[in-house]
Length: 100
Image: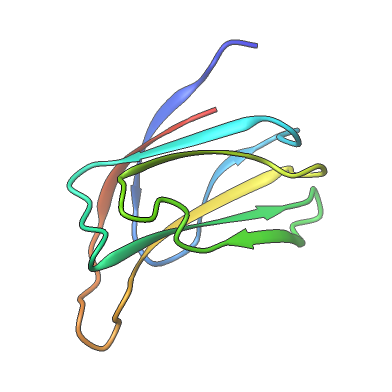
């Protein structure tokens, strides 16, 4: 299956980036100007009814990119980039590329 890649602007609100049969497929994120000391990338997988299957926190660690495999039953994928220390670190919008 050919890969599809799209630019997104992500912040601390969950943003649905993909919908369709994603179970077992890889999805990758590349974040521009990412500071892992201040922010973290989180991902949520949902079934076709919009119910959470699994959430992974801080998937990129100290890096600005990460590829993961969607669990079985995934229909929707959501990302967010949240401040690690919300009381100190301000909200920020990041440009990211999502490839699946």
